[in-house]
Length: 181
Ligand code: ADP
Image (cartoon, rainbow, N blue to C red; front, side, top):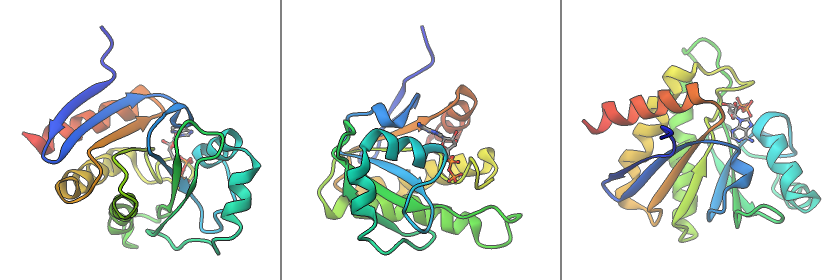
């Protein structure tokens, strides 16, 4: 049997860790690890824009960008997900530039925005751990810990951590086990 998906009931809902492509998930919102322009880029951002189609870029062009740690919502267009929540992770600069708090803010503000729209099922990529260079083993407990802390207070009941590699999924599962023990 595969290790994935790994699904756990927690206070306020369920957390699922999967290995896969976030553009394939039929949830209420997928979270995009965007950049401050919100005008597309590489990695998961590029994949989401390619899968959603040019209508997504057109809507993003009306948003005026996004600050690091903040989040903005659009429709999902050609994605199976109804919405995209765009958040801008911190660029890793060694850890002394508030990177951990800014990464936590990404997860917290994405959940708050989902809550404001009454969304129930959302999926996150491993924000900042690609081109932005945040160490994956430090990012995973921040991601899991922030979601565990907020889940009881938001409309969101089901959170998917959509990891792009088995290594990333293992880090998220270990963080989940450590924080729910
Ligand atoms: P950032 O600039 O925030 O670091 P990246 O897109 O470079 O964003 O990477 C964030 C994470 O998203 C990385 O772990 C990367 O492997 C992962 N990723 C890339 N493409 C996808 C995808 N289609 N679905 C899910 N995760 C993805």
